[in-house]
Image 1 (tube, rainbow, N blue to C red):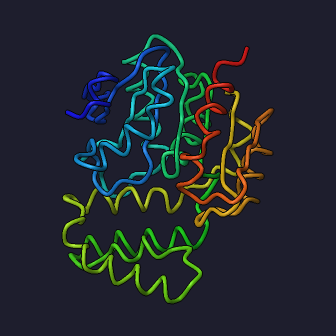
Image 2: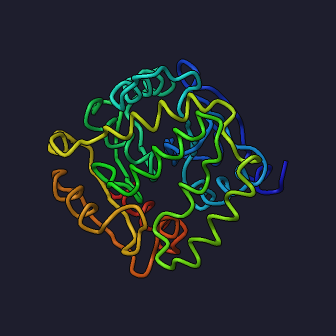
Amino acid sequence: MGSIEKELGVEEGVLGQGMPYLAFGSGRPLVFLRWFTPDHTNPKGWLRSAEIKTMAPLARHYRVYAVNRAPGMAAGTTMSDIAREHAVGLRAEFDGPVDVLGISSGGSLALQLAADQPSVVRRLVVASSGYRLEEAARASQLKYATAAAEGKRSLHHMLTIGIESPLKAKLVGAAAWVIDPLARPKNPADTLAFVRAEDTFDVSDQLGDITAPTLVIGGDRDEYYQVSTFEKTAEGIPGARLIVYPDTNHLGAIKHPRFAPDVTEFLDAP
């Protein structure tokens, strides 16, 4: 266990019917719904360290629960099904509604959760995500998951999206091709089931049903979402706030020096 894990007191657990989580930090609960992960497990190695390091500034203020989807996801599962499963787990784990932070694919789930199961969400933060997937992201995820399920090399479909330089895209694609065997999903059926659920995700008609105070955060150079998608997401939710960081890409938004202070200020506001 690394020094930051010891400092934050990282513990592992299972939410509800099998959703794995890491819990660390202290304070009021903050449920972090994870970004896209090939496997529905807690991360290991450098991925684990990177996740904890990214969330550490928030763990100084809150008890962060980094929650993943449950393994063994059935084919045909919808985002509403996943949201319902999370709601059951959250009600069993906590005494009342909790703050929810959804990042990237976790933002899709967070929006669905807040729309379908409003009683479990106290305040909502959606980062690097929006009311639906845009076509480029949808296509790359589906190609990736389908190829992985067929036992083919697939990582290049995910890593080359949004790269404007043809030369850079070619180099990144070649590197992804080489490392692919080391990064393949252990259960590609889970990967494909979740990707298909997010493929049909669209809460444009439900944004007005979200009652939790909401903050939407994005970068103006996000490879997966246009600023107009962030804007429409915030505009559709009553009273929602929008923060767009300049010169910031998809992952850069959550690493931005203002990210943790902006989230903390919003969650702690009267």
